[in-house]
Image (cartoon, rainbow, N blue to C red):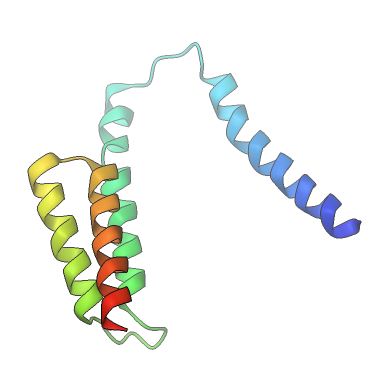
Length: 103
């Protein structure tokens, strides 16, 4: 039962830490500089995910056919649509498909 309580408390803590900002800033306007900076969050997260996926703990670059195909598909979709969600979906779909066929 203590594990369940820990999970529930962690979930509530996470929810509250996010909800506080939504509630506190609901009636305020963001400064234009902050909005412009937030435009770069999704590409930065995408880059961090890609780099962490393609490197080992020792710093070696690990790239094979699934990674190369997924990156190529994601780059093409990003270039054509400029949509972060579609880019992620296309890259992961191609990555998983090629990984399933290659293995």
